[in-house]
Length: 114
Image (cartoon, rainbow, N blue to C red; front, side):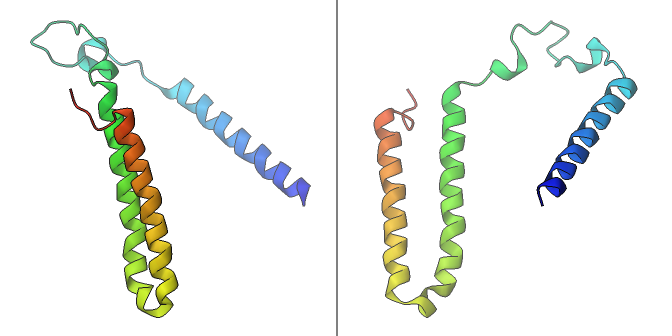
């Protein structure tokens, strides 16, 4: 059983290494004039990844966390009638945990914009 996992890991490693080598040999160097962002012919003063403040990334993570929360709530709403009161208790425990997370994010200043 362990030999099968080792063979699979070896095949995966060789596949990744092979694809990397193919990319290195077939990649075409990009012309710097065509890949620079357009700013009226001026050279960029900052790196493209440093334009946004870090608080936007935190806000994005919070949004994704609560979006995933909704993914849990939709199937629950479909089966709550079949499961009864235990499903309601479980959902309130889940929402309580999410509320604690919101309070923690608020206390840490993740929701402050100034």
